Amino acid sequence: MKHARSILFTTLRLLTVAAACAMTSAYADDYVDVSQLLRAGKLSEAMTKADVYLAAKPRDPQMRFLKGVIQRNTGKQADAIATFTKLTEDYPELPEPYNNLAVLYAGQNQFDKARAALEMAIRTNPSYATAHENLGDVYARLASQAYNKALQLDGTNAAVPPKLALIRELFKPNIKGQTPALAVAAPAGSATVVVKAPVAVSTPAAAPAAPVVTAASPAIAAAAGAVPAKPTVSDSAVKDAEAAVHAWAKAWSAKDMSAYLGAYGKEFTPPAKQSRSAWEQERRNRIAGKSSIRVKLENLTVTVNGSKAVAKFRQDYRANALAVSSRKTLELLKTGDKWLIVRESTGN
Image (cartoon, rainbow, N blue to C red; front, side, top):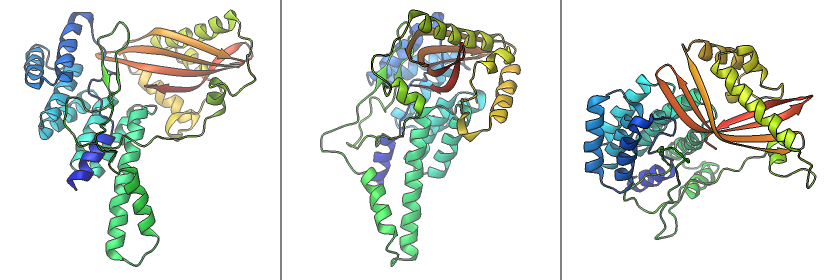
């Protein structure tokens, strides 16, 4: 059981610094210092610096997130759970604390709690790929428990062992000596660091998460090149698509719901299998309920392939006291003389 826990804990992707917590330049150095100490394994120094910072700014979400990671890496699981739980209460719109809370629960074999936390992360941000991946791993563990129970109750059921073997194959140990790779990304011009696996922690070698294979949608296939070779792309097409993305962000910032919702094409599929009307109402409630919103786009790149375009950028979002920075991808389709959004995802 201990070995199984270590495999799952390594497999689930733990964010060690919240990409969704943006920072002001006045405090960027403090975040960077604590992050660097964390990655270097100097956990005691990192904790001291985090505590000093939080003594002056006790509600700061990013430093509290870092403190939770430090607690987890020093083996203080209960303290880390308390830290991330409080973050979900104070900042329910941030999905990352739910994700890390789920990883901690999974490490204790509390898979039902892990599932609930990940479902909250996805409800908060339906395009949060890390939470979807982790939820798949948790479902696999819950299935393993159910199949084991089925075998205990009926050892003659020949249908269960192959299913159980498949799940065990998914989480089997990796080749001796291999350890999970760290995926670290630091956006240009920002001190925010994303680490998608545990850092500065000694763990048994284990297999990384199994790759997820999905069938590409027509829009994705086109962006990947599944269209006639060498399409003609004019500079004006790229500029028009860029202008559409900026107009979408401007309408969001202005809380202009007509322009904001009008930026989405009829082909747009809302997340979490919502109906279009339910999704629009949810967006109205979220946006209209904020006293102020600012959406800033950085490092915008647009590629056009025929009537389809893909826009990638870093999105800095501020609303009331909440500040969120994340990578965003929009897929657009040329409809008449307009570029309209048909798919959006975060963290790609």
